[in-house]
Length: 125
Figure (cartoon, rainbow, N blue to C red):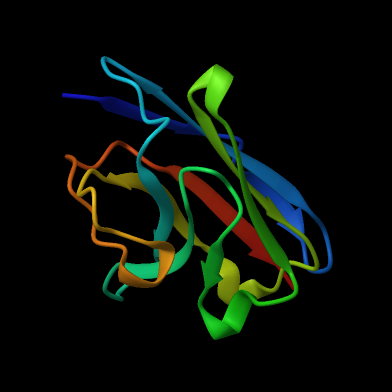
């Protein structure tokens, strides 16, 4: 079973940028679709972005389209989320996960691993 560790969160002003990282250990994620989710205070966890194993296909929730970019480095077993032009409504704990199903894609992403601790992103206005 892979373990996922998120990092890179912090406090930033609106309009600023952050780059989140998700490092996997315990098993390779090179062949898995990977995704980012977030949970804002008082809200359910929501999908943010997903990326195919090759990195050639990505999918985003509408609210982050054009501002966030998901990428991956399979050699490092790591997935990234570059977040630009951050808004106060992006404030949340961000989590990554993997879809281990062989038939998955970024548009069909379903998390299949236990959730990690996440990393807190706070955007001030």
